[in-house]
Image (cartoon, rainbow, N blue to C red; front, top):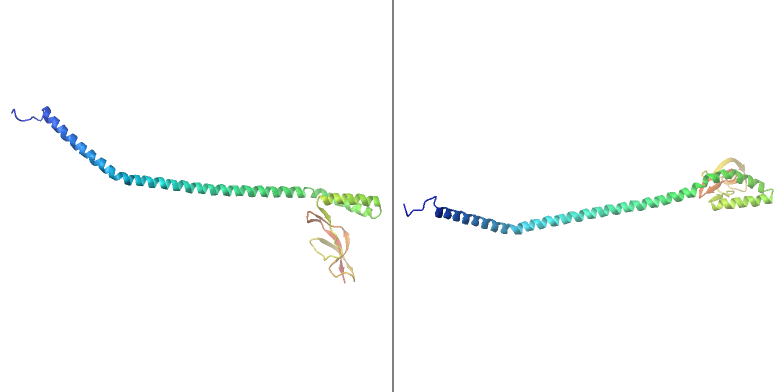
Length: 190
């Protein structure tokens, strides 16, 4: 059969290859056109993903900034509290020494009533202690206050109102505005 093309002949195989190649090209063209159709939606979804990531990053940055601000405020408060505590420690550091000096001050006060030189020493010591925050309480004629006074006895008095301090038996002292020794007093009664 001279006019027929045999399946094993090269022209037949070439035709099959050509047909397969054309079909493959058509499929590729379909895929490419479908990809081109999907590109805008894929680009949109990719853009949305990026926008979402940016929003998440901004949210995280804001959270971290707020956390940083809170930490900074906590640090500032801690530093202020530490400074106040340090001031308090310095303020009351000499209180123990001042308390130990009170009996000496009392003795000098008693001696100052009889000797001018001792009175000068007493006044100098008292002035030094005043600069440190010691203040003697002058309580005669004031209303009895259990937070400042220790009542040792009562005295009949016509001139003073009942419940007021008639006599100071031992001086009391304030140190930096708080009582370090109660004033021992006699209270007036009618």
